[in-house]
Image (cartoon, rainbow, N blue to C red):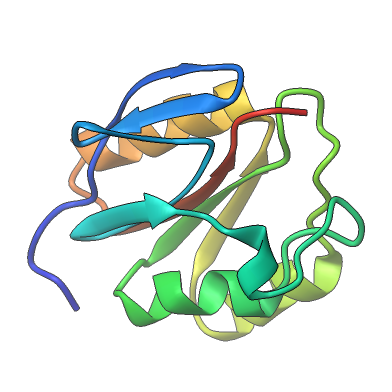
Length: 123
């Protein structure tokens, strides 16, 4: 587990997230870091959506809470199997539309929670 806090999202707009001076279309965030979320790595698509393979690296990085964004219009799915997978590992999960997900993630960062997130910046 990293002793460094999770990086805040400092600005966002359609297709752009700014985190720690870097910009991403979609972002993976965890205690101690951030990177682009490349859906091709795990074969992610809007349906069925975020899968256990997408969240595993965030759990391994020490996230006790994961905030999963469904997109600005809620088009990215989060199957119940993914939520159950996280709960079975003792990870609290919150599934929210992008604007709410960013606000919730940043609030948890400010509270010093070991939080991770997958943020989809468009649809």
